Each structure stands twice: as structure tokens, then as C-alpha cells.
Image (cartoon, rainbow, N blue to C red; front, side, top):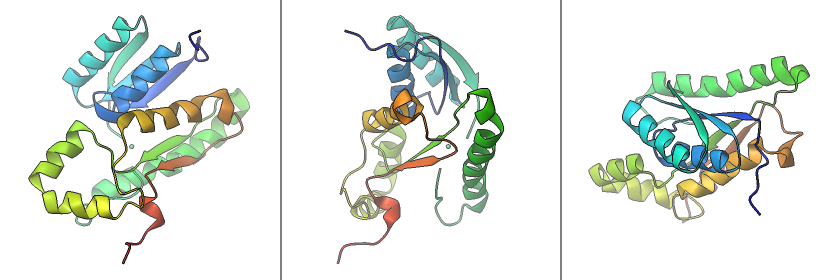
Length: 178
């Protein structure tokens, strides 16, 4: 039996042109949602919407940029814009709760996406340092992050509002093993 718990629902997925976003968009569409797929990568968006159509799903592509909890040193403007997502999530949740809308955000950690693979190839030392800082000792699979997104938007989390769910294998709990 196919689970269609997102029938008649619209889900916004940012970064939907590849990696985590693409997996989340496919997961939501597979469960009946109409997906608003947002990304800067128009070619990637076209591929994502094609994949969703092959599933028999519905998707609308929108060019946009958002989605992080921390940022690397030397990129303060990037970090500030990403931190703004958390504040926007909390205020939008407060403003829309009375209308029956739940708004939450997902903050994924190091995830084995094409973008991370390319960055790791350019800087293997940084990639090794990053994965060693993750208590799980590996990056996430995009499908693991997508599963968290589906849960966060599902009825199973109906009382969760205005939160940023960190899914990072423990990376932000900090520290390195000695």
C-alpha cells in the first residue's frame, strides 16, 4: 500500500536542484504532495521536476536561494544570511499558526551530495577534518536528510512549530575525539 499522507498539500523544498533537496522533493511527491521546488540551478530544477513527473507527481520550479546553521570562517555575509533563516522560521511560524500552517526549517550537516563531493575533491584535507568532527564519523546520505524533512512536515510532528531541526550526525554538539 502506497502512503499518500501528503495528498492535497503543498510543500516548499529549497535546494531542490540536486542532492538533499532533490531527494526531499522526490520523497514528498512520492507521498502525494505538490512540490514547489526552489533552487538557483535552473537545469537542476528542470531535472528534479522531470523526475517528479515520472513518479506521477506534481512540481513547480522556482528560482530562489536560502538554507544553514553555521558558516565557515571568512564568509560572514553568507553565515548571516543563513542564520536569518532561523529567525524567519520562528516568526513565520508564530504569524501563521492560527491559520493552520506549521513552519519549520531543516539544518542538515555534512551530506554526501555532488556539491560536497566536488568540494572534497578540491580540498581533501578539509573534507577529512570535517568528517572527523562528526561523531557519526561519516556524512549523511541525502535520503537520510530527506526522511527528516518528510517527518518534520508530517502529521507525526503536528505539534512542532517554529523549530530548526538539526540533522548533522552530531557535528554541532561539538568537539573532537582525542
